[in-house]
Length: 187
Image (cartoon, rainbow, N blue to C red; front, side):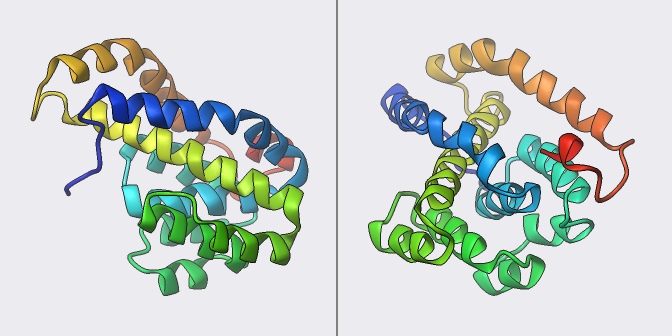
């Protein structure tokens, strides 16, 4: 699989900046979105970027939410139609897939989502989409370091590898929790 990665510091810093700006909306997501809406956003974006770290963590969180086993279908969806069939949150999935496919924020897509689910919830979906994009690019950059090394990738990997190791361990721990767990566990 050809995964998208950061190859330059400027790309990395640009995404870090955008994700940092989105932190209030990301944090608000746990309050205004259901666990399955949060994971629909994450898994749909990851269906495009295919980060194994994100697959492990959000696959399990999606399984524990109301998505249940459909979370795996959503994560491996190869088209918008496949995404829409794997979740009841079609507006969220449509926005997240369009965002990931275009690789950027689109005001028309956002306005459509906002009119569908409301501006407060839409801003959280947008923030979560940026957050997953950042995480997927980061994970994929770490995984690509040995295949196409560069000084930037080496420093990035040394800095972020502990975070991604924790994500991997936490993902493994989540496998013991039941499908469709209480909200406190699945969000």
